[in-house]
Length: 102
Image 1: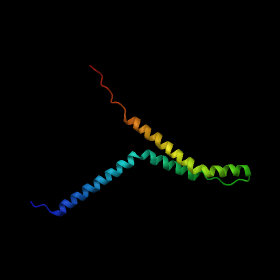
Image 2 (image 1 turned 180 degrees about the vertical axis):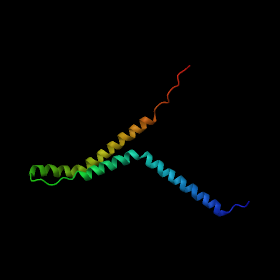
Image 3 (image 1 turned 30 degrees about the horizontal axis):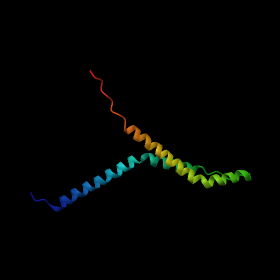
């Protein structure tokens, strides 16, 4: 039978789409702990807004903390991501269970 170019093109397109989706899926799964830590820190940062108070000393301390908050959030997200990645690496290197010799 004669091979049509439409059949070959369709197969190549399906193969390319499937390969691309698998690559994106593997990337998302491998970076999931980092994504989760980033989203959690961004959510916590958004919820941490507090109403202003009448105490001047408290306002000064709040202003200083407010200025450093993005840096602390980034450090926290990076630290959580690194701990999660380290844990995943350690769990992935588990030696296979040895079978008992009979």
